[in-house]
Amino acid sequence: MKTADQLLSAARERLQRVTPQQAFAAAEAGALLVDIRLSEERLAQGAIPGALVISRNHLEWRLDPTCDARVPQATGYDRQIIVFCVEGYTSSLAAAALQDMGFPAATDLDGGFMAWAGAGLPIQQSAALLEHETRAETAIHTM
Image (cartoon, rainbow, N blue to C red):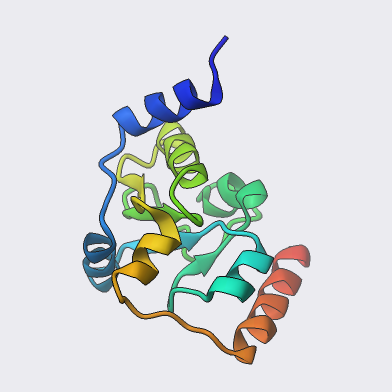
């Protein structure tokens, strides 16, 4: 039996977590930023422009290149994937699960969205975010 803290520690031991600045540079170079926060959190806090929104419940199926429910960006196992949540706890567990699936370059954003925002990196905050979220969820549910 393991505690939640033990699971988190084990996940982080094998991740090469990235800082907000490293995540920004990696995204510019083609890494996929994946936002697993709840829609309420994205609406309240804002979003990282260009990040792919996938709920934690759907993450493995949406990124599995062999799955019928995959997103168009799920083209193989070699792309760097940087998962983020609010503060970088759930995202560590999610990134470890992606590594277990065969994504060797999967990792997470150390400190999550809050660290990104605290670093002064770009954030989208607008009513358009709600409209985008609604369209994205509709597309996912029609797969």
